[in-house]
Image 1: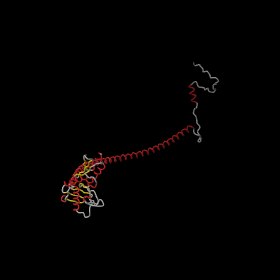
Image 2: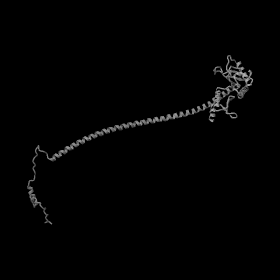
Image 3: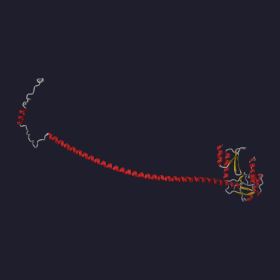
Image 4: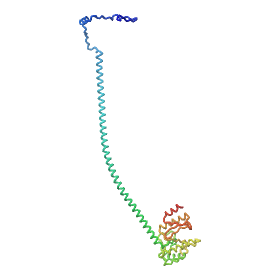
Amino acid sequence: MANVQRTPTKNRQAPTNLHTQSEPDINSALLLSQNVNTSRHKRPRAEGSPQSSQSLNLQNLQETLSNWKSEQDAHISELLETQSTLITKLASDIGEIMNQNTHIKNSNAEISRQNTELVQTISFLNDKFEDMKKELEGLKKERSEHNMYIQNLEQKMHDLQCKSRSSSIEIRNIPQEEGETSTKLITAVSRIGEALGVPLPESALRDTYRLPGKSTGTSNTRPLIVEFSSVLLKQKVLSAVRSLNKNKDTVNNTLNTSVIGIGNERRPIYITEQLLPSQRKLFYQAREFAKRNDFKFCWITNGNIYLRKKEGDNHFLINSINRLHELTNKM
């Protein structure tokens, strides 16, 4: 295998001056190398000659590192300044937040104190309200008792007034003559008694007078009040008046001024019980109600007002305007 040679490449010539001779004897080669001066002497570089590429590269690298270091130092300084500014602002914000927190704590303490005071105030007001409520209930009860007492007094006064008028009648539409005296009034009343068929002597009359007030027409027609000596006599007169009005066939047969010889005009005379102002108003309202609702009868007996629809029907006692409203709702 040691004698095998490589086949040469076609059209390829071996270089000519590439053969080197080597000393086959190593020891002789060493001796020869010692006698040969192998040191190299470099020519000194001139002062203005350009540096080698290696020196230039090193210098450029140092300048680059120096510039990079400067840039980094500047960047780091800028970052430090920014961080310092941020830290300062953060510290300021934290301080402000701490102040706000302290203020909030103080505010919460103040609010808590105010809430405590508010609760105490509400509790105080609630106690006062309860006291006022009890006092108001007491006043309502007392007022109710006073109202009942006043109603009882009014009823008693009403009864006394009615009792004082129990023997009196009221005669309306009798004109007043000049120089009218009590004697003339008694004479007129006696003539009315003759027309009714009920004797009315002077001894049967306790008092006769006109009510005070203004005239209601061209002549003085203020009502005439006649107080009899007894309630029985008054009832006889009123019964006679109702009988006369019931049995009348013409207007001329009614009780009028020509019968008693007073005045030149024929005027109808109306005789009723002497009523209180409240009763008179209620009696007027009852008569108007009777006209609107076709009630045939409306009368007063002993101060009480009655209504009756027709003959044979039950009568209704009218003691207040509310009673008329109740009847209206039933119609």
